[in-house]
Image 1 (tube, rainbow, N blue to C red):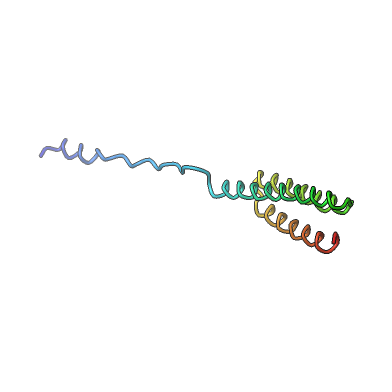
Image 2 (cartoon, rainbow, N blue to C red):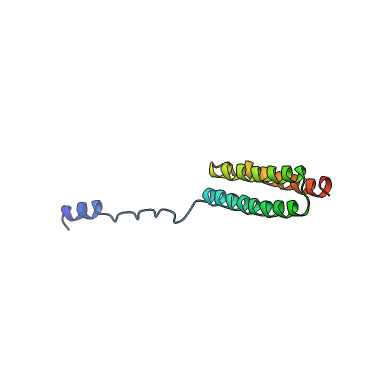
Length: 108
């Protein structure tokens, strides 16, 4: 064999495959979307319960409790949109527990 054949085979190599980008959203984006969906569902449920409670009895406390829960759900959606999913999750859980306690103890 001649020397040029050796240098050709030594310098010729197969290109490395390009890493394929991930298809779909990242885990963080999925977490944000899940928190936003959960807060939206809770917001819709709170609006329905508020309407039912106001139909049965009219009270400022009912509007206050469920109004604050609606505001909190909106805040959680905004926090999740900005990437603060852990804080949003804690606020959503705490707000739901507080609203349920207020509904059971104070409004009854």
